[in-house]
Length: 562
Image 1 (cartoon, rainbow, N blue to C red):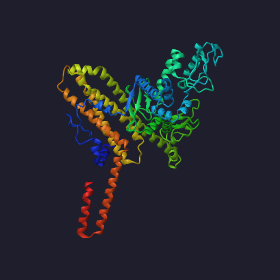
Image 2: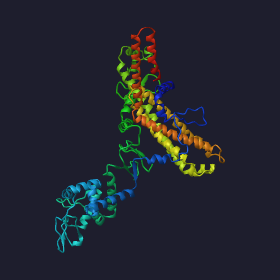
Image 3: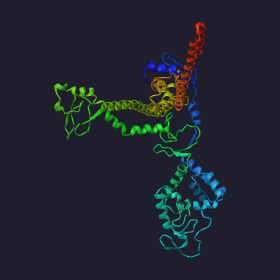
Image 4: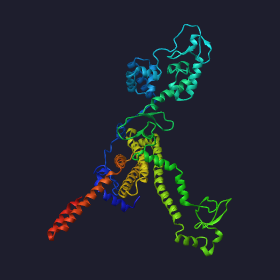
């Protein structure tokens, strides 16, 4: 972050955009007259439906297991009725066409015969049925009575024992069992779930039904499973809004596009680079380069964290050398500067012998320090967010009931506390990713960087104010002996801080997703203003006497008002 004076300069520079980033012109004021208002706007302090109204605008739907099964059954019944086929055949068609009812209808009515052949739904059997008392299994070649023989639409006879083994092996191989075909190598007839229900073991049936259920989500481009560990919910996403952040019922929020943790206002490519950088070995190499030097003999990197310039490499090398010039220590002593200096190094450095090495080390050190600055703050906000989530759970399970008893207020009227915690959790997530945004912001865009850091600083201040209000100020009411006359004022203050913080962060996200376009537009206006001043100056130069002075003066008036 820049100094406070730099932040004020950035604020003055962008004063034309104050209304947008503050969300309006009415400031939120409370009893703390000495505290800044952070540019927030006050909304309805009793807006207890804030979270509900926010969720009503979402462009996704969370599906439970029963919802998925209901959708599957509805689609199968629709296709079965429209195409006049069995439900087993309808399910085979839907799986082949990735559960797209519209595509099934289009392909079927365009060329039914081709679809039947491709999918494996035969109109007539390949092997005609006989009235023989015994039939030969096509796998084990033993003879069985007809009741021990089973076949699909093709009519190829196989005994139930071989069918069971064939189905079990395929199911244990994975989800490919959903596209199971007749055991005859030359036959493409599909095997439906009716054969599985009839011949498979209970364990295999359970696996098959699980694959069948998951195929509805995994084959559908509009649906995805929640990536949170142990979560069985799915998300049905409606594209078109430009916002890819979705929240599962398990409380995990993620990006629909890349399935990483929700990361607005940062785009998916930046998140990918940031995560890779956090886990890459390149940062380890930068640290080694910036903080260590190679042993002149064995080349093993050595870190000097204290003491004099006399270095001794670890066994088995045990080479003794000077940390500064890397020369053998036996050539050093009082004449070269003692234990804490090296005249040879200073002379060689003046002659330019160490310029490139020192330049590389300095670059690595600066790069590492810059990365560390952003990463520490990114990780700190993540830790604060996790702590806030734990505090929210405690508020839900313990504090709300206790507060209700102490203040003689129904729990239904204390939802503003939970809403404040939910807002803190969301804002911590946004603030965390602004540090990844700042790390990849180009260094040459000085105006954008200065304005970004000002906005980020204001967001941090406002969030800390809200966090302190709900985390510390609430304690006096939780530990009170009885109802407090100041509790209603506290309710108004906390609800107001929650709403204005929400408003500021929403505008901050929009601004960053826009690439801070307002800075560019301000620069364009400044360029136009400069051009206008230049034109006025030219007119003044061409004029003569007092008349020219008056002309020049009149041209400066609109410039001063820009």
